[in-house]
Image 1 (cartoon, rainbow, N blue to C red):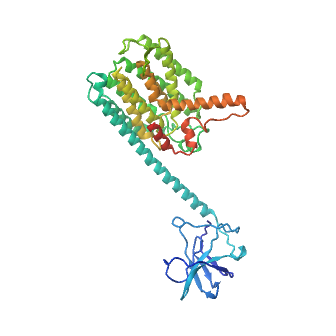
Image 2 (image 1 turned 90 degrees about the vertical axis):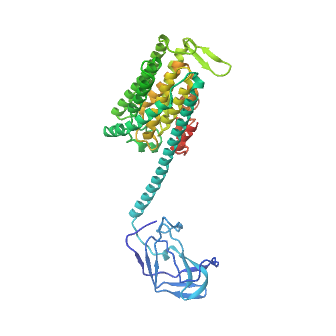
Image 3 (image 1 turned 120 degrees about the vertical axis):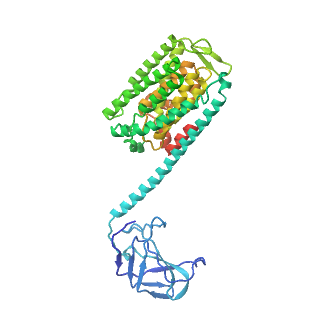
Length: 493
């Protein structure tokens, strides 16, 4: 709708035709002639002459009020004139006499309407403002939804840990300390959430911003000024709390903490190169994979040469459910451990694409692994609960809309910690179940690459995609699902 800065004065109005309409509902009592003109500002008509069947009305002055576009739905007619929308005018009853009908006025031709030149700058400004306000209201709704999702996740984890602590003696058959898993979880969560209020402004200050991929969804470009490397403050806190509570003399906790920090160092190197080069190709994918294989191989040989506690009195065993039971893998156990390090590190890294997605799913995975390893190594259960608390504390700053991202520093460290817990206890099957989101995200990337680059390009000239975009959360985004809904679905999974 066009707008102009001064009220218009129309000095002549041609003869118009009228069409008699049915009698309106008896809600409107007879009154003076009312007219509604769909122009933005007040208009004046001098001495218009209108005709109906059998009567002639003369008015000296008719004023038309402007409508508020936010409160009234204004229809538009495509009449081909220079005016964008010209609707009919409604007259109801005549002056001094009652009328049984309403009369709708329509211009006979385009030439009957006066030609008015108006500026569109104010119209564009008003339209842009309304679209901005609409987007802001939707963002506020999403932010509230993100807060509710994270509150629900925290309540669920707290209730689950309290229940496990209450019946832990039935699982371990040994007396454990009060709030055995809840205590490290809460301490890590509180410390990380407080540390975030100090570290996040520092990351802003040093302009350590996230590098957004050009191939990703277009709306992710709004996150380009969000700082990254959040793993610098929540990973060390989770490892340190576990060491203090479980004891630094614990062999399993020391090995898992070392592997976690080694993966965090790989991620930190990738983040530093990425930020310094101001592009997303700081450290090549093959280089990261080779470094992860090196750390996984070292951890496997450390397991082979170190005496760790095991309820089976023998290492290299893989507990499986059902009638299979325990399976002795021998040297294949070392290969499986290295493979789990690479797959978990890259799985969490690929999942870290939405606000709160990687942190929340990692917290759930750590709690699942803590419960699984509790009968085998209770110290590692403390390590898992502490890392879960660190993820929850980080979520207070990483939920929608995120104030900081964990970066490769955090995502690779979380994957290494999960793989270390499974390698020390043989709980690879529970790792596969609790980390199902990471496995699914990595699988979609593998399927997309193999199907697009290997299969379809060999059979047809152009490649064909299975998903709109890999990983899976980007595909769901392009399908029109909102970001908090995707994150909530991953939590419920």
